[in-house]
Length: 105
Length: 105
DNA sequence: GACAGATATGTCCGTTCTGACATACACTCC
DNA sequence: GGAGTGTATGTCAGAACGGACATATCTGTC
Image (cartoon, rainbow over all chains, first blue to last red; front, side, top):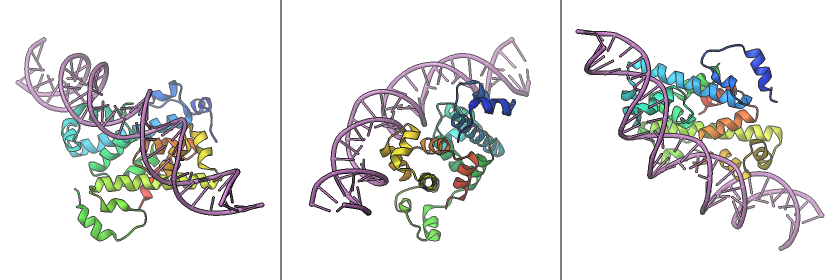
């Protein structure tokens, strides 16, 4: 039901921006972090597609620039709730969000 | 960029277990609650497929029976983080989770 | 290389979430 | 109708989150 972290490390090879592998994380934790990263990347992508700054996005979300930066960085202080709510608030559909999660590396 | 709640109500008709429509929620909030409900249902489905009780699931998740009940009820006190982490911990894949979110009513 | 705009990082405090416990409710079997 | 098992609901103390602010680090442009 659950492969060991070791197996995962052995078969995974190197992937950019994936520091989680080097920490003491279980499989599910790795999956969860990667999932957050995918959503964070998508948030940044949406912002750039619209040509918005982080501050502009922050205003739309009634939040702050620093929080948007942390969202895009998938910072540990950012919850999945915040990421998903933000994506939906910026116009992403549930289908799109689900797609990003399903397709995430 | 954002249809009114009224439009949504008019076009949606009745759906079971969807009390959100009657509260003062924005479109994104409705989408978010429905998304949580879909994951909650999926959690219950997984549990039943394995023939587990809520208490057994709670032990696996290192949580409590009451919290599992609240997860399955998509209680307001349950975060998306908790739901998704729990699903992953029970063996669901990111693809499955994404699928549930994308396909959610 | 100074300035400006954009993005990143650190911290703080009020709010929200979570596990745990108690208890209530539902169902079955005897 | 009492006991046993499973599920739901209410509450609370401790932990985690989120907006805000300050500040640091980029990234041009002049």
